[in-house]
Length: 628
Image (cartoon, rainbow, N blue to C red; front, top):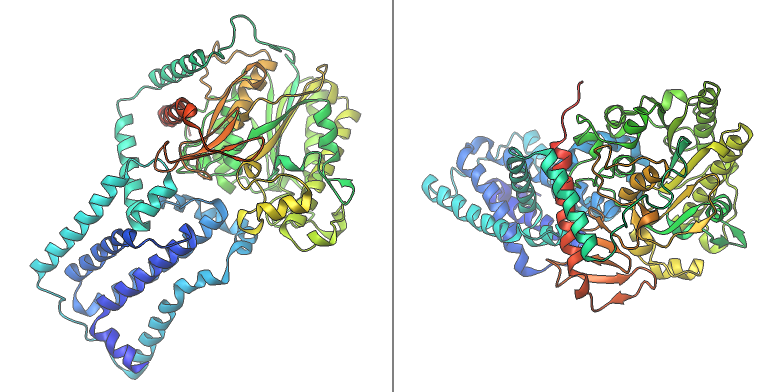
């Protein structure tokens, strides 16, 4: 220890540089599953730039402390980013700091994914802290070096290292795939590249117009679908106004993947209520999540606006100061009461700001429900629906049509259902597994929904109500559920991407026969589909949608980013994931789950979705501010 202490006192620059580089290697191992020697120069250049600046501007007395602080901060950032990647599958940028206040409310989920090996990041921090404490007790002080070189030489070194980093950032800035870009640039330079990109986007918007952007988006979609030969024919579309004037209930099912529908475990169906609903509704089995950094709140945002999440910030946090064109706002103007129900605190993901921005007249959050301690969020789905049904019955008695949104939480990660409320027994092979817990939670979610539907029927609400139910995002964590093992356990063909991101959509319309609709769709398509059924023309109302009516589409392309890199899309045939670009990407057949070697014919889809999502980003950023 004494030898280390003396060495550290003489050359903190070298020691800290080595420690920080080792952490960069560790980060690449955890996140990118390997270390490529030719990618280490960008990490070294970024670290040297920081350390040399400290060497240049900090006095010898404080230099060691500043180095130690930088090292500790980097350890914390890399630790948090590794945990983040293991949960979301993407490398976070500095914008993820906006979500730090949400961590305590999902601490059970976060805690369950932290691996002991992640704490290696802090070993040297602890050792160096012990050395500092020992030296202080002994009355020793690190004398430090006056300079590693003369100021002029140090300044030249700073410029050289910064130039090397700048070169990497410039060469990697055109890569749309965020994971490939982060691997190419390294963690620190990736943050700088993200900041530069954000600044350029803001500068480009200063002279932008929301009307011109909306017109460009409409023209792009018309041109693309005309060229694809799948444009909707003139005249009233199919099912237009079929449910005009009816109530609307939209249920967002937490972490609900589509493979559970019609699945049996141990001879019992996992989702008997939804299995039955699928037979009596428009059921969309090829429906996919499209959420961004805001997860569940992004799904709420997207289903109500048909606008893509930007992927760099939760939409509820970044855009709740806007007047958001939305279905609740539109229906509210037509006399509907618009309410939303969620058992969590409304400040979680800034919903207290998002709900008014979306045009909801009233929200019911945690204080509105009795806490029956179902999970870490509090109230159960049964309590959610019980309170919601009471409010809807009151609206019915007042003869007021309503648009009601319910956001469930019983099947939230880590999927622990109290033993007294479990309604299905898992076989021994699934006991104490995440898969078994997940299916148990979906079964309870399904049961609670069934009770709610029975309550709607008993109250006379069901026959005059359109009910929409869909999953918000995936549930099974990729690192805990090998696709081959899941396939073997359940007797299905489970793919780690297609099956993971495949969520169900049900649209039950009184008087309409049940129908399985194979058309591929995503959460941006919910609003246009529902608007058509309600007899509301979004175009006539001046609304711009970035999704499509799934009941009047024979072809569709939907983009996805964040859980997959920008440029990823689903179409009627494949899931495509880019590499550095289109040519080095990969494709998977969404039905067979097999790789597709030849995908050059989908190049137009790739170009289209990149442009469409860019226009969506510009559109939401240009929307007018709303009054506080």
